[in-house]
Image (cartoon, rainbow, N blue to C red; front, side):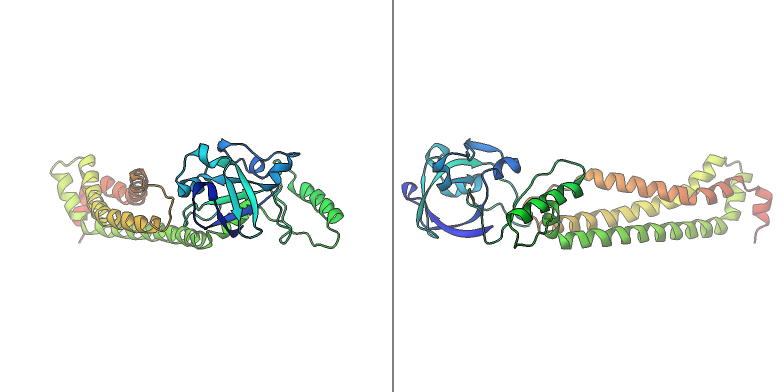
Length: 291
C-alpha cells in the first residue's frame, strides 16, 4: 500500500491524497471484495490497464452519487496518466481497528518494487502447496529470494499490544482465582471456628440443618455483594476506556458481567461447601464444649 495524489476533474475535486493498492486483476475476487456498484477488472480488456476501483469511503469523501462516480476520469499526479473508475467496493479493513477506513484506490498494476504475490490456498496440506509455489517462484524469478507469510499474521502484527494485554490478563485472572479460593477457604475455616458455640446453641434451640447452612452462606453472600458493587463499575469503566481506542468497536454486553459473577459465586460456594457441611453435621454437645 502506498499513498498517491489524484484529482477528479469532472467532479470538480481538489487534489486528494489517498491510499492505493497496486494489484493483479484477480485481487478483488481473491479477497472476496463485495461490489456495491460497477464491475471488477477483466482480463483481456485493454482499457482496464488504466482503470480504478474505489471503496465506499472514497465515494463518501467525493460526496457524489454512484452513477456520477462510475465512469469518472481520474488524474494520477504520480504518472500524469488518465484513469477511469469502473467499480466501487464495500469498505473493508486494510488497517488496524484503531484507524478509520480511509479512501482507497485499487489499480491492476503490480508493484514490481516489492515483488509480492497474494495466493489464496485451499484448506489443508499448506506445506506442500507452499513448496510448489516456491518452486514456481524460483522458476520465474531465479535471482530473487522467496519468503512467505499469511495474511492473518500481518493483521496479528497490528495488535501486538492487545495480544500482550490478553496474555497478561489470562495469567492475572488465573492468579486472582487461586488467591480468591485460598482467601475464601481460609475465611470459611475461621468463621466456622469462631461460630462453633453459636451453631451449637442454635441447634439445641431447634435450628434445622438448612437454617445453619443458610446462616453460613449469608456471610459469604454479603461479602460477594459488596465485592460486586465495587468490581462491576470499575470493570465497566476500564473496559469502556479501552474500547475507546478502537474506531470500530462492540458495546459492552451486560451478559459478560452476569456470567462472570455467577461463575465466581459458584466457585465461592464450592470452596466453602466443606466448612458449611462440617458445621451442619457437627453435634451440639461437641460444639458447646468448644472453648
